Length: 189
Length: 189
DNA sequence: CGCGACGTTGATTTGCCTCAACGATTGTGG
DNA sequence: CCACAATCGTTGAGGCAAATCAACGTCGCG
Image (cartoon, rainbow over all chains, first blue to last red; front, side, top):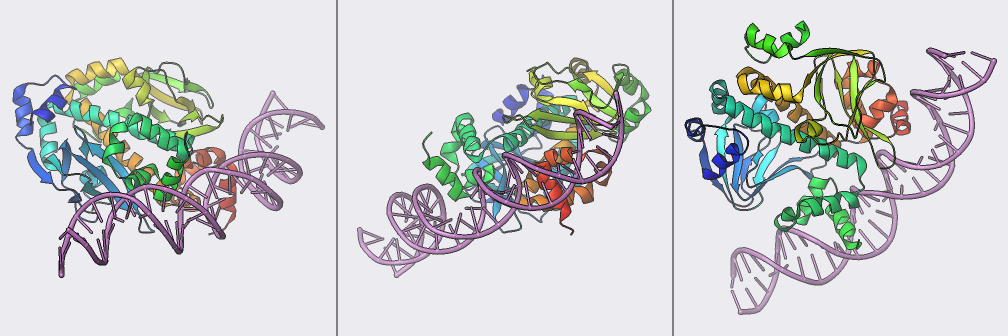
């Protein structure tokens, strides 16, 4: 629990009492590599905070191909917001890419906490601000760069991922085929 | 001011006193068609709420072509979050697409209000949740649909925009050239 | 009227996909 | 502990969706 407490304290000035009210609702869960936390079509109930490991969210497109929407590593949240907020069946899958440890909190508990804690509201608002910025940049990259450039940019800005996710997942996240990524890598700079 | 008060009340249960503390910081601004609220390279200071009209945010890519990142119409917010939060020079331009009326609030005033108002925190958190879901869907569409499908989806789900934005801007938002959009439209269903 | 902004159409090019074949590595059961 | 099957990455040939480039029509407006 110290990981997430520290993470929150990095964003808001929060009392131990308030923090404990929050962490009391968290549940630790271990997930083995390839194990699912959410499958499309089911109802998503939890937000997940990654304590250790690496997860991905993805959907299956109409051609039957996996398309990775997001990765999450240590100190990051992952969930299907659409399903959680709108209470619709999930369109996304969430799956471990390594043996991992997550903390989970049900959306309804979180909503209840928001009623009483300004600081938690603030923390999650700030997380969403960061996510918004990241999403915006992703669109900008997709509109501005060739496949080769996107790969090089990702590699240079996220070296830690290069070791941890297989190449075909990186290809999927960047929006192209494994074959194409392989060719792009083949051409030396 | 009634527009934005009603908008906020749609999301949170807020007292008139709290609301007034917020609206007191807002400033009304008229923007003529093609007028800029933000130019890239300058520092972004405000969030903008559209009372009437239509705005767009865009950047110029390395080939010198405008790429539209977002539109905003009535009851919607638009800003360059990256610039506001990280206090960096804006990468985006914000410009009116019609004669418009906006309410603006400086980021620093908003931050101050967040310190004292749980409800405002909550409101902006909820706005960001919705934005997050929209961003996620946009990535999904880009990964799942052909140009023709993206156009038809947009047309069927956002009919109000079809009347209001010129075709070349729609093309830019969808990520392709005006020529291609024209051809896609040429093929009857 | 004449000019600039916007949309259309056609010919050509290109970035990335598809499909197929083939190594290398891993892991798993006999 | 070997044999074999999966899994993952690489390479090449061919195809296609969308971009590029260029020309032209139309409209609104100074």
